[in-house]
Amino acid sequence: MRALWENPLLQYHLLGATRHRWKRQPWLYWAATLGTGLVYLLALQTAVNYRPGIDVALWFSLFIMCLAAPLMAYNLLSSEYEKQTWESLVLTRLTAREIFWGKWGAALTRVAVLTLLLAPFLLFSDIRGWYTTTAAFIVLFGWGVLLASLGVWLSFKLKRTLTTASALYAGQVFVLLLFPMLYFILGERSLPRELISAVQSYGDAYYTWIICLFNGAFIIYINPFYVALEMEHFRWLSDWWWTEHNGNAYQQGLRYMLWGFTQGGIYLGLALLFAGFTYRGIKISWRK
Image 1 (cartoon, rainbow, N blue to C red):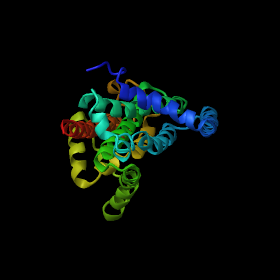
Image 2: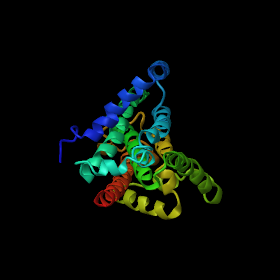
Image 3: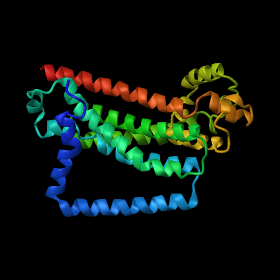
Image 4: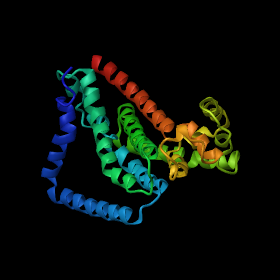
């Protein structure tokens, strides 16, 4: 297998396709870049001046990621079918693994770049301590990778660009908004915080994660916006939380549950699962 960066498909999606678009419509892309850059600088200046809480900073970053990440992956494979270039791509000397990495690697790189662009909003928020900062980055990057991996898989499976984009955005509406609303309407009338308050050890945290799979609270706990909301409880606590016993029971419960790190790990695990599905599908099609 060639070096990862030397993959011609990866280089095309990251550099070649971009140069081609700029040459074809330079004024449009210059205007879009200038407008986006001005909005970005204005938002960054606002964050520096007002120092929002980690919940607000992460909400804003997640909102941008929810909008942008699907656009980074929704057409990577479907465009090959729509342009009828898939057979030509398969007949090249590229292996199935190289084709997969060229597509999936391009989506991951774009998500990583966007995460770096959003990093200042998290770093300039009103937080202190590496635990909260690291957890916020893992949640943001993990959610972006999950959306990108799901987008690549749907792009391969559905073979239609518009259908893939619609499925990605509609899926987010269901998972992030409608499912939690159903939880509140059909079950609990408030946020599921009682379970977390009862957690007093890592063993309790392990069983709490299992219990929430059966009582419906899991759909709330893995919601990245709810994760951001509860991370505000870590604002004034010490990094060395495992040597201290200050804070209320709810704060200690969140920390024993490794709040933020666990959800980020779940996002990355699901992303690898969808990536595996995509690779398996490409491998089967490549053999044909």
